[in-house]
Amino acid sequence: MIFNIYALPVIISLIIQSALAYFTWQRQATPGAKPFLLLVLACSVYTLGYALEICATSLPVSFFWLKFQYLGITTLPPFLLLFVISYTGRTYRLTPLLLVAIFFIPFITLLLVYSNHHLYYQAVYWHTGGPFPLVAFSRGPWYWVQAAYMGLATIISNVLFFMMFLRTTALHRRQVAIILIGSLIPWGTHILYLAGKTPGGLDPIPFAFTFSGLLFFWGLFRYRLFDLAPLARTILFEKLPDGVLVLDRYHRLVDYNRLLLIIVGKSWTLTLLYVMIQLKFVSRRDDYVRQIELERRPHKSVNK
Image 1 (cartoon, rainbow, N blue to C red):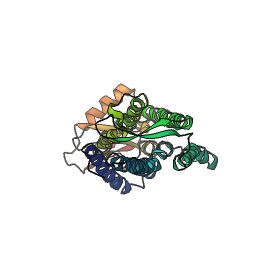
Image 2: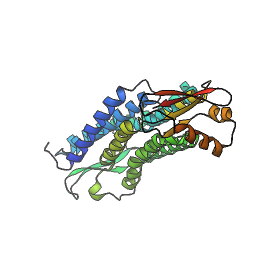
Image 3: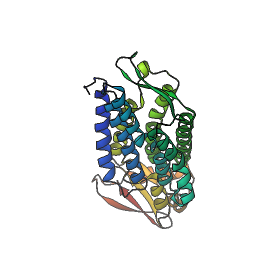
Image 4: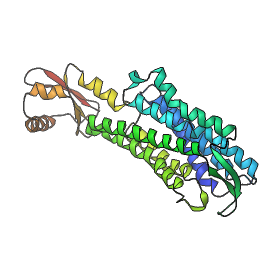
């Protein structure tokens, strides 16, 4: 094996994924964090295998690392589905039968790949027409079954995320939007790869993981992606017995629950006007908690 300059961005992607896995592991108590960690680890296996594949100098070695990648490739769709099921609060639907259905096609794919069955790869050969030699193959019928499954899992996941996007508040929609965009980047490049639109037969997905990883990192630290899942926030926040007003450190209104509107007893516009009047008397200290007496009962104004 020799070092391939094309492996450098893939290695950078692997480093980003490893760091993302570490920080996600620290937040594994949050709904969705554990399956997301498994998803990132699957991406890491895929990325590591591809970096070693394109550094190989012979067909047997390159094909070995191609098969190694399928430990990650086959588990990406089921882990994505488990992540969206957990993050959107649908774990009660996760029955043993559904788990079998989720992992059935990946399991068959893994068996076919490691048994060198012609249903997956009809032929494997050494391609020298690109920027460097790499393993190439003729796709069998089950290859397209696996590809269709990956596409279906992505569509289902993004539909569920979009439904969640519509249900959450504007503040937490940013979290869901980051996940939506971050998951669509690699799958969009996968479509280009299947259509043969990538240069030199390169697999663009490990390269795309770099951008998804950076996006998730931004969401992790900018919008606290796994500090509290949006759905968990919605359930807890809306069931509080008090009307609650949440301010950020700059004393801007960032959130409030529906009970606040009921307590005030005004229209939506008048309620916001009432809140703006009250904000004039908010203390400038970041950690100050102030009780605002409303018409019927007290609610809490909390600096976030």
